[in-house]
Length: 215
Image (cartoon, rainbow, N blue to C red; front, side, top):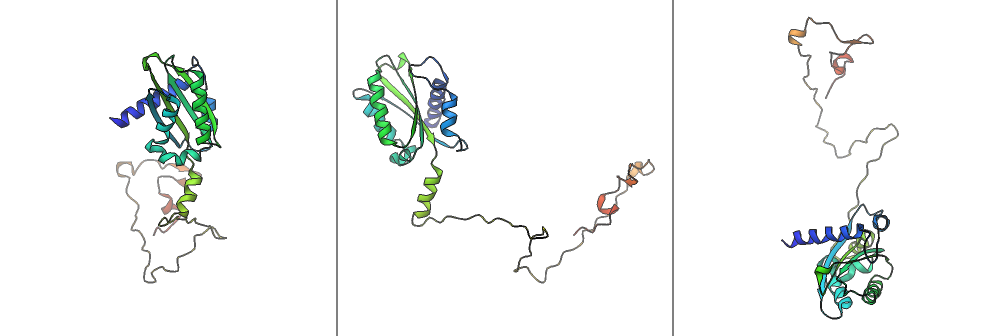
């Protein structure tokens, strides 16, 4: 149920970003610019708070979100997309205060902010936060962490004659066997006209026409 709610809140946040009737609007071009080059891999979190000091409470909830690992990933973000939603009680002073908290937590990030009004929220303020997955930085951390081994992918290289080199560890007793492939009768079509092209009978398999030995 929790995962379903997270998906629903995320979709609603995206939907608000695409609307043009907000207090502050952004469009998909902003979203695309920030997440481009990341193959769509991003962190996405949704939070909702109520009561006094809502900007501070909202920021605390974001930093404590389990997806953000205590804000460690947030600090490395190069771009942050935020969809804020609240009732008419959400003032621009609160929005500005929240933006300052975001800038402090993600100092190198390009910020794209959308603000929308929803009277059904009463005294609540909600936020959807999305930013590209900082894969390069995390890979570097993983390689420096004790007990973590970074695996390198071996790449095949062609030799000068475009043939793969034989392994030195190949079993000398191993030999390839010829496959027992024979021509199969065409049954009732044996007496039919052959399918010829450039003097070649296409009904005869290529390996038989060209006398190729399959092993």
